Image 1 (cartoon, rainbow, N blue to C red):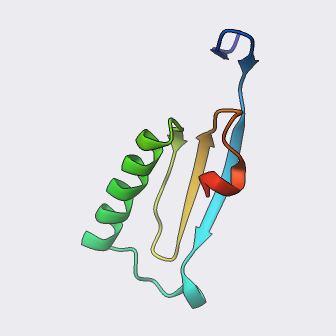
Image 2 (tube, rainbow, N blue to C red):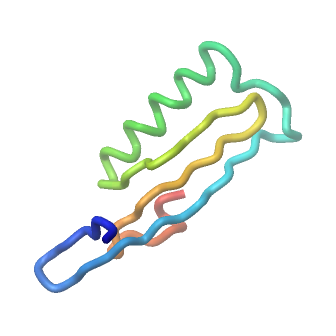
Length: 78
């Protein structure tokens, strides 16, 4: 059985697949920029109590499978 997150009155497992694309799909996320982007995304996830399950960074886009708590809307997380 899957590990669900638990609070006092709720049991939840909200996972979302989000794709962020660079403007005009320019390949700018390579090298140091990609590493800094990964650090910023991890820091943001920690501050909002989100869980990043996968998050590969390609040259022109970022795929993320994230777990968001129910009290946080998807638009706020993005």
